[in-house]
Image: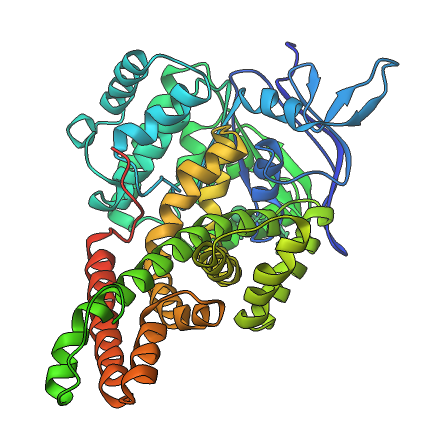
Length: 259
Length: 230
Ligand SMILES: Nc1ncnc2c1ncn2[C@@H]1O[C@H](COP(=O)(O)OP(=O)(O)OP(=O)(O)O)[C@@H](O)[C@H]1O
Ligand SMILES: [Mg+2]
């Protein structure tokens, strides 16, 4: 088996007295498309946020490739807390798509996509623009390049947000409920873009979703998390059709009844 | 005679007409003090707001203390302090400049709170998206957060601009010839206070109404989504 690109090693995350992740062990292989499902408050977003360095960890080690994310290797081989410079370097490998899009409202669509490549990666303006237009083409929004986010529908905004994340050329793309904030009729167009990405790119994808059918279609592996630890994982056909754990069965019964 | 202009105290009307150009001199000084004071407050207020939000308490706490002190002590005391104490340390500034600085420093404390409110009103998701895209913190602040905060705080800033203009008369105690000071000098010499003081009131009213209109226009012209960056 190839080296994992993401590895959580006994990761603990506490918010005050509340333990959200309780010794989480979790690995993702390069290029793998993994979906995390689980009840509300089980820690799904927290996992993604830790990877995107939006949330630190209380204990354990998170590895991205062969480097610790929240630590740096000291000269004597021990791990010490990461500096901002280390986090900055590690973040270049990751991108994130948020539930609420979080586009920059005062920038055009094109500028939303080119801003970070130009000012963070120091890509030339013309090159960044050309690549942004290519990404807009991929998400089907070339004619909206000069509009501002408020002029777009939620589905279009989320597609721009996906293009914006891709413009940074991440190895790992994180999606936190990318369609939860959308009107039902707009969910499909965003899922279509994510599906295409999953099929055509060797990008590692980590997705949190409540859309079980979508999870089943695009994932190589589905992880069921409850109370801060992974309770069951497997290929979507297995996990969805024949879950072995009682908690998984209960959860799936509940969400599938709703849907 | 003041500023080389004679007045005609035959009756109230002639007095009013003849002192009008004199009062305009005073108005001009008031406007200059207002604008300079506001400019200082806008710049220094932003600096205070940033320092107050500094990650280390070593910076944020003293800044908060200073800002609290500036807001809770009378402008007059701060003005006297600058006017009488600074020269003891060899810093001698013209009265006008001292006055404008006093205004600017006190109002910077108020404006720092306005900035803070505007900055905090920007959704947390904007900070998170900026971090995910790996922007340096300073760039996030100047190019992502501030352009969204400023349009939200324009009305409050406008109110403080008007407030500053109304505090300019305090500068008369250190001999600045602003509008009110000019009017009282005229009153002292003509024994008619009613006319010049009424005119000062009228000029202030016009000034305030114009400023309020200007702020309203500016507020309507600014998109609520932030200052556009094409
Ligand atoms: N900043 C925070 N401070 C305190 N508690 C937090 C914070 N962020 C998350 N939590 C708590 O951590 C737990 C896990 O949160 P998380 O957002 O990871 O859940 P989730 O699985 O994504 O849930 P959902 O399906 O509702 O999005 C929740 O109980 C939440 O209240
Ligand atoms: Mg969540």
